[in-house]
Image (tube, rainbow, N blue to C red):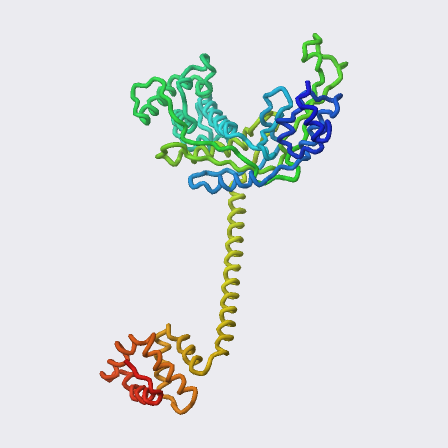
Length: 452
């Protein structure tokens, strides 16, 4: 039965929904689970529209930038080296093989990220317990096992990173406990070791099944860089539909193969994974271990569905992306610094032009005051100026105007200098004031300017 109302279909331009630009809506609200190779449109045609749609990357970019700038976040960058399948457990077309946010970006749920890290940690523990040999040399699990002295330490770290309930202490036969599976025959012994360690941490020495909050939060992962077509159509062909559908007793070569199309995330998409400390955490190595597990899990086991067939495998780009981001930050810093320098130079030039224009409108006395004010903030320079000024020929008009400006400065901004340094030092015979005090007095009489 069609899941799309006729009125909605008409508003969106017909059966293929040509007016619907949102691939999220196509696979959720407007999903067409009844489509097949004989319908109109066909399943392949409908999904081709999904693959051709473009996501609104603003929201995904904002999320990635937010996650990367979280103060306590540990970041892993990885590039998808094969197609990725997510959320394929459902039997209908709705959101088939993908997790789309409302803006059309394919994100990886935090639960899937956490499962990827847990899988590699448990795989390492299983091999270690079965063989009795710590992974080393070129073993894929060597980086996971390296920080631990024995499998019991690894089990304790797994419980601290991911947390546990009372179910994690049961046997594998009871509830398919993955910890019991990973520890193999050593489960009873290692369980007691881990129980004692968690009871010590939690302050519950007699608890038989201690519950522990996970120390790491695995956030959803969003694309940070993607090719132009980040969704592709994949196909799974059943060559014996009658046999698998229990309609034929044996599989023969007389049946017609039935291709089933589904969307997949294209190889080349780069994802950013963020891990955060959850709750009180006194041991910083816990977050570092979780990061190592995730980056190794992405490259060794992959993530999502059909990883055994090569889907969902990543390569670790953390060092490369951090180097690239540092280069971008440095480029931005230099550009900002250059822009600030240019703006400052332009402002200084504009101010200089304004001062020159204003200076040209002044009379000689005002110009002399302006010249003195320009050097008045540098007392050493001003001191030399006054020494030369009152030794010069006062009959020259320019010198006379400059001396008058100095006398006015002694009465105004330079009053403290005159009263506390120039005047008392001249009476004590200190140079240069004792040598020019007479010229200052003569200028005072000439310009009829009293001094304090």
